[in-house]
Image 1 (cartoon, rainbow, N blue to C red):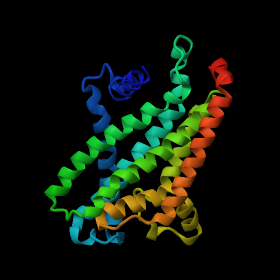
Image 2 (tube, helix red, strand yellow):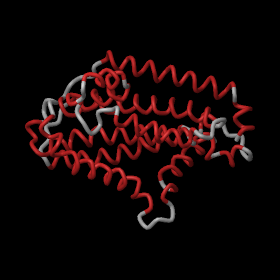
Image 3 (cartoon, helix red, strand yellow):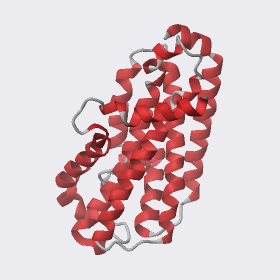
Image 4 (cartoon, rainbow, N blue to C red):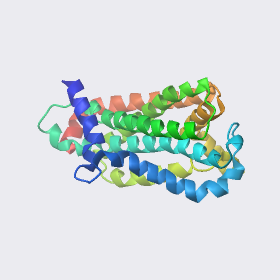
Length: 259
């Protein structure tokens, strides 16, 4: 029964989000692609000369597009997962009063749906890479486990925020603002080399900086993951996950009453 509900909720995340529109589910891919195109057009001339990642200089004008897309697709999945998971308790409040749904099931579809969107987007990205004769490396296989770690972090954070959102309604408005700030503190559209020293430490402490650096290193440069920073990210995801599970179970009755 739980598996059937999970599949149903994932389908809702993927299809029902744009129900009633002419293009329907196609918007789940078209919107992030439009976002990527805008950033590419705006930043390509500025950033192209500052790229220092091995393997990109040889790709000429395509170098920045590859750098940008590889980071932006991952970031979009992370931010959307956090946002949707954080709102999951309130969005499903009408069901909680009718069906005894486990609360911890509700944020999971957001992470799974974004994983599906990421996989589809990466398939289109792979076609682009093939067209520009991108040199593939075996290390690119690390992208999948790195993305899985990212989604675990996003799911843990989103679930924790869902617990707090049940009592603090202002969080629904605060989460997108914080994520927008977080976006600019993460080297998604820019390279870390352009940062002033006063900001470099803060960006370096950012778990998404480590994840994107390793993801790009594996995909673009053929590097194996740097396990030191990733261990800190995994530890953070585990700590947030334990806190989210503990608080959800401890406050479940209060959460349901508040919703």
